[in-house]
Length: 102
Image 1: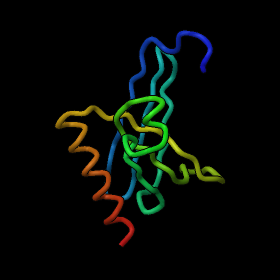
Image 2: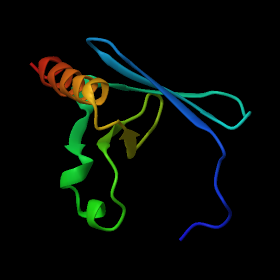
Image 3: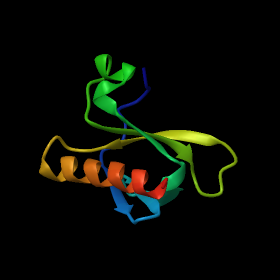
């Protein structure tokens, strides 16, 4: 589906506040790419319940919304481990997004 072997190292950092989801990506030795979304504007889907899961099994969240300074909505996949840390972050993000919509 994709050409080439892909990156050797991908580091993604997620920062969650009561208003923002901030993501920082670094692929191999390239510059850090930062994107953010307001929680009140996002829709969260558990990736394991998506149509894509049967084709590419993985764990994490599909997040749809408008990135800061973007004119249109977009979707990202936020990979999360199937462990206590991943489950805790998933629950915290879902709860924070629900609270931001109130």
